[in-house]
Every structure is written in structure tokens, then in C-alpha cells.
Image 1 (tube, rainbow, N blue to C red):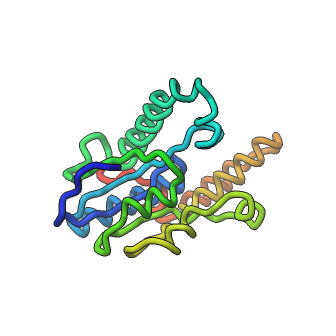
Image 2 (cartoon, rainbow, N blue to C red):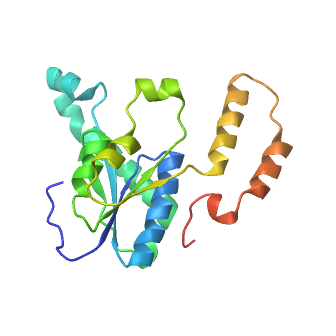
Length: 195
């Protein structure tokens, strides 16, 4: 993240992990960047498997760092292709790969008052919140710029239910899913802006 930054360009920084929630946030960030005439800065933060401490202790980790970084880059580019297309439709984009945890990486990138930080705000239960830190809460508490928390797509809950039913080998009511999909507004069905 030690790249030179243009001094006057407005920026929309967005966290991207490849999850459905982050793809929804990326789509919203792309829309905001177009609306504001700003640069889109998608950021994918990654850590070595087992964390930094495990990577420092392992001699094999030093060899694998390049592979992990390449995989992170491929995941980010895949998300960008899926949401804004190959050409970006005229959207100025500067994609970043950051080694570290997502919260500090996003807050460190969106470090100017005129930036906009866009994050996915997934629905999480109490147990999940207790065991894993929330990137959105971290960013909301520490960002020096406005933060836009994007709720997950309404289809994400339906997908989670279908996944659980499939895991338990229960009958899947596809008619119910089709009816639910029909009630979701077209702009919430998935982000394929400009395609």
C-alpha cells in the first residue's frame, strides 16, 4: 500500500473479499464512484493461513507468500470482472492487495476526509459476533471519512436457507425460491453493473 496517490482525485474505497456481501458492496461502491466522478479503490486484505505469527515461525511460509498474494490478486480481479466487467465501463479503478486484517487495511487506505469508505454489513448472530471481529464495526468506529455500510442482498438469506436445507438433505422448495426472487427489486438481485 505504499503506492503514490493522486492528490486531488476523489476516492471511493471498498472492501472486497469475494463473498456475496462484499460483491454487493463493490457494486454499490462502483455506482457511488460513477455518481461522484471518483476513482474506485477496491481493497482485498489477506493474511497467511494461521495468521502472521504462524507465518513468521514457519520457513515454508516464506516460500508460499508469493502464491498467497497471487491468489488474493486473482480473487480481487475475479470480483471486479464479475461486478463491473472487464473494461470497467469508463470507471477509473485502482485495485489494492493489502497484507493484514481487513479493518486496519481499509481504514489505512481511506485516510482522507473526502474519501468514502464502502463496506458490507452482513447479518451476523451473537455467537459469530463473539468469535470473529467485525470489519464493519471496526471501520465505523475508526474511519476518518464517511462510511457507507451496505446491507446484504435479500437473496443472501434465501441462499443461506437453501444451503442449510441442502446440507441436511432436506427437500428444497424451488417454487418458494422463485417466488422470493420475483419479489426482490431488480437492482438487488445481484450486481452486474453495466452489463
